[in-house]
Structure formats: structure tokens, C-alpha cells
Image (cartoon, rainbow, N blue to C red):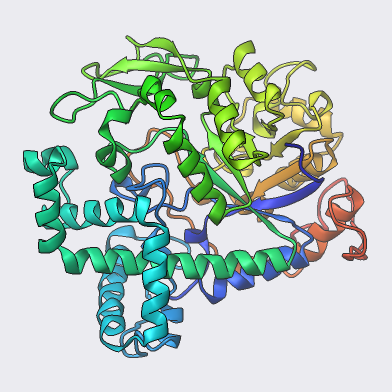
Amino acid sequence: MPFPRRSGVLLHPTSLPGPHGMGELGPHALRWLDVLAEAGQRVWQVLPLGPTGYGDSPYQSFSSFAGNPYLISLERLREQGRLTFDDLGEDDGDPRRIDFGPVISYHLDLLGRAARTWRAEADDDERAAFAAFRARHAPWLEDFTLFMAIKEAHGGRPWAEWPAPLRDREAAALAQARVEHADAIFRQALWQYWFDAQWQAVRSRAADLGIAILGDVPIFVAYDSADTWGDQALFHLDDAGQPTVVAGVPPDYFSATGQRWGNPLYCWKRHAEQGYAWWIARVRRTLELVDVLRIDHFRGFEAFWEIPADEPTAVKGRWVKGPGQPLFDALRAALGELPIVAEDLGVITAGVEQLRDDNALPGMKVLQFAFAGDATDPYLPHNYPTNSVVYTGTHDNDTTVGWYAQAPEKERDHVRRYLARDDAHVAWELWRLAQASVADTAVAPLQDLLQLGPEARMNVPGAASGNWGWRFTWDDLPDWLAPQLRAMATVYGRVDAGQGGDTPYRQSTTGDERGDE
């Protein structure tokens, strides 16, 4: 569906400032929304919001339906009497980096204390609201909380390594587990209730400010997840619960062996037999949390790269047809118009383009990809369709400053000639280019707006560790940033009339007036 002309910022909530080692859904999240509103930005893009596991990647979540309990604001729990000032210490680590190991342990300890306090002290109205939440979300919440409780009881081992009756979801074994792990199930459900309440408060504030939240849905789910364990027939698994084929992408210019992601692949025939009910439920739940969703690896709906599970690389894979239009027909019949952005990066076929366009879905344009070719390059703004979302870079890219520093001189020369400017502030200049484009939506990672280098990169695809940990502090936001963003958004028609924008936008051939005060 077409979107209004607007712009916004990509920033995952974990990257927000705060005193407890990582960003949370409390006062700092609301302050961030106020900054966006002041800056005339009407989109906040986040990464997937699910509970993260090994590697801390939001794209490898224990559930496609649940929220990440590490994002629960400890300060809000203190305000509600579930924690005390003595419980909450001050983080003495690097305020610009998340040390996930100790930070997660710290949060889990305090969330456990808060849950025990709530269970002992909650009044009747609170208990009724919690019960209503559990009943409403039972179709996914019951499996998720049981999955997490059993996983905890087995030292975090993947579900395929549990005793066979639990692995295979035998009714008697599950009933016994619900009794044995009742406390852990309760705790996990309560955390989901708190996450949902806090996130909806943030989302409500965003709506009041005219800011849409753009979320993210990875096309594939994690193998070690409640999704896979809960409905194994929907995936290509053997009798022991092991994948027979896995996801990835074939060899290309960047990798001679391709990428073997390892996610289980959907048995699309069974999904079709069920009317795509699981996907309808997944998208419906996501749209309870965000206003627009980006589907990562959209091309997998048209065709996906199937790799035998016993192959160590992606070389010996094959293209297999995906569900195609029938999936989107089912989604639209159940949910109405689909506020979806198609991540259509990489080598895209005519079939993928047709699936995207037949459903009127905006695709993605990334300016860092635009300057290696000639004037016909589809990532150059003069080639954009209006129904698209343009980025300076994404969470998988280096920052624009880092990218430009490593780009071949021919590419950098193309940048300078296309912009007709020098490269003193290349990240800001690409943001101006994105704003000026005909694309309905323009988005930049906050790192690019702050003109940061590779030390602020969010993710290096294929790297097993060291990702997802970047944060900013409020001191990192210069006074000029919000007024200049609003002025630029006004110049290029991305702020609603009457929302302001009186600050003059200062142009300079050197960029000295931008960021050097």
C-alpha cells in the first residue's frame, strides 16, 4: 500500500540511553519520541522485538509473537513498587556499548525479583488484567511460556535435545511439564504482560506525536524457537526434530560459498492446507505492536534457496518456489490492506518484482549501493518509483562514514559528481539526497545522522559475535540536529503543513555549518 511522504530514523530500542546497561521501554524511549517529533520525523524504525537467544540477534528470536523481556523498563517497575531503589544499581560500563552477558543476567535477576513481588502484592484489578492478557494471547503465549520454562529447566539446551516425549510434544509429558514448571511459566507470562503494557504505552505516545513505528519481520524463524517446536509439521523436519533442509542464499560476488543461515524451511504445502493460518496470526500479532512492517528477505516468498541440512555451505542448494500470491491473498482476506515494506535487496528476479508490485508493496533502495555502476543503477534516486523506501544504509551495512572511507575511489568520485558537492560530510549529504528523492519514505540510521564511523556499526553479517551492541547517549545529540532535520524535512515536503519547520536549512559546499559547532 502507498505511504504518505515522510522520513524517519532507524534505531533499535536496545540502543537507547539508560542507566541499566541497555535501552529499555521507559522514560528514555519517550524522550526519544519527543526528539523525533521535534526533528519533524514521522517514522521510527526498529528491528524485530522478540526475545533474543544465542548471539543476541533480534533476527534469531525464541518467538515470532513474544516481546523481548530485556527491554522491560526496570525504572517503570520501580515506580510501580515491584522493585526498590536499592534493587537498581547504576551501570558502570561503557554507555555506548552493551555487554550482553552481564546485562542480561542483571535484568533477569531483577525481573525475577519483580515477578515475585507482583505475585505477592498485586491487587485484584491487576490480577484480572493479567488474566485477561493471558486469555487473549493464549494461542501463542501458552506454547511460548512452556517452551521457555522447559528450556530453562534443561539448562538452555535446544528443544531437539530435550527428552523425546517433550521434544515430540506428547500430551502427557506437556501436561506434567505445565505442573512441574508452573512458577517459571507464570513468570514468563508476567514478563510478556509487562512488555506488552510498556510497549503499548510507547506506541501510544508515538501515535499522539504523529510517528509511525516501522517494525521488522524476518521471513524465517529460528530453529530453537517456540515457533518451530510448537508446530513442527509446518517445517521440513525429520522424526527427531532435526531440519532436513535449511535456509540461505547461493554463492555470489561477495561469497564463493554463499550464506548458510541454518533456519528451518517452511513446508508451504501444509501452510496452504491450513489457509496460511500461522502466517496470518504472525502478521496480525506484529501489527498489534507496530504500524508498518518490513519483511526481511521478501524474495523468499517467490523462491527460496534450499540447502540440504548436512551441507556445510550454501553451494549445493537449489531454488524452490515459494507460496507466491496465494499467501498474500490469504493475508489480505484476513487482515485487509497490508502495510508492508518488501526487503527486495540483492539479486531480484522479475517474479519477485511482480509479486511485490502486484501487492502494491514498496521496495527498498539503499544509497550505499547506488554508486558502483552507471546512470541506470536502480539505487540511484533518479530511477526510483515513488512507492519505495530509501535508506542511506541499513542495520547490516557499515555506517555511511565507514562505507565511504573503504569505497573504491571510482565509487567515491561518482558520489561527489552525483551530489555536486565535496565529501566533508558524506553521511549528511546522502541523507539530504534521500530526503530530496521521490521515494515516499526516507530513513537513516541514527549513526549516519550523527556522522559516526565503523565503531558504531550495528551488525556485520556472518560475524558470530560483537554485533547489536551499539548505543548512544543524550550528550551525543548536538543541539543543531533536531532543528536541521526538521528544516530539511520541511524543504523536501516530509513534514505535515502546520507542524513547523521555520529553522532555515543551511547549505554549504564544505558542510562546515553542519555538525562542527
